[in-house]
Every structure is written in C-alpha cells, then in structure tokens.
Image (cartoon, rainbow, N blue to C red; front, side, top):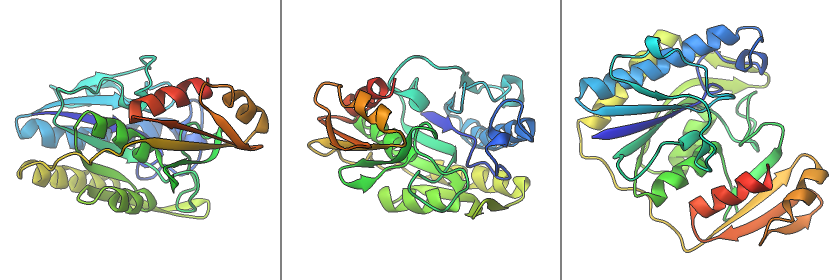
Length: 265
C-alpha cells in the first residue's frame, strides 16, 4: 500500500503560541523537532508494516522538518507546489489512504489558542454546505474526491472531536487540550507511542472506503477584512452575501479548492 501524510504544526504536543510556529519565534526550533518526532512515529508504523509513505510538510513555507530525522524510506515533499491541493499536494489516485498529523481546531472554535482555518490572518470562519469547516474538512474532501479514505488524525482535542463527528471511523490521537491561551499537553514520548500504536492497528485491518461525495459544494468564506471579501466577490460565480462573507458553489471539492485559491490570492 501507499499512504499519504499531511503534516501541520499547530496541533503538535507542546506547541502553544503563534511565536513557536514561526521562524525566529520563541520555541520555534523546539516545535519543529516535536513535529518531526510525531511524523517519524507515523512513518515508522507505516514502513514497519511494509508500506510506502509520502509526507507533505503543510506548515508555513513547508520547510519545517529535516529529512534526515525521518526514518529511512520516508519520502518528504517540502515547499509549495503551486497547486490547489496545498497541504495535500502530491496526493493522487495511486494512494490507498491519508493521515493527518499535527492538525488543529478550526477558526470558529474555542478549543485551541492556535485555532484557524486556512491562513490565520484571512478568515473568521469557513463553511461548506452550511457546516463550519476546518482544514481537515477541506483536505479530507480532496481525498474523498479521489476515492481515498481518511484513516487517522492527531492534534488537539477539539479537532479530534470534530474530525470524528465529520468522518465516522477515523482514528484519532489527542496530543493536547486547548484552554484559553494555554494548552494541557501529553508528554511527547507518550504521544509518539500512541501514534505509532494506533496506526499499526489501522494497518492490521482492511481499510475503510472513502466518504461519499455530494452533488455540489457551497463554500462560505467569512473574511476578517471587508476589503478582501470585496476582492473575492469578483471571482466568477461568487456572491457577496454581507460585507465580510462571500459564497460560491461548485460541483467538486477540487473545483472548490481552485476557487478558494484564486479568491484569496
């Protein structure tokens, strides 16, 4: 089998402040090490089971993990490939399953001090078909369109709960709980052991099927700045429904991702 990992940093255990997620910030190097360790644990489970694994670094400039610190055999995609797949860049029909490491609560929530959907400076919230959407929501939809099931997610307690509600059967590992501006974190070694154990269990059983698609997808983007909303409203087919919110309907998740890419360029 061939498995795809999309990795972010805000859901990694110990990562609590925006400074720790950005170059030059306090604890940024520590956050990158912790991210690498969690991803490495997932890769070990996949490689030990005899499968192929490709990792997409999906945070900031996508250059957060040192390839030599990942297990031999891991394939790592660094940087951005100028595609609407974004954090899922590299995914195609040849993969058998997707996993999400270091994911975080969506922009509308109060379950992480690092909550956001997409670029943290852009949106108050994002909805798809009337439901609030996280980055997991948007990314798993792209996998669904390709017929690839979402198997596993690790991140803060809030995103684990949301992912389980949205994608019944997905296996999750909660790395921490967000409380106000703080986080209550599991020890990194405990997190890594859980990740490796749960993925090993997943791969010892038949994989589930991808989530079924719907007939169409309506996305609402609530921007933090009304100027950005006005700009986005000029995209073909988009409709501005209030000073901050723009809506668009497309037939497929990929078409929706293409629209969002250009509406927020």
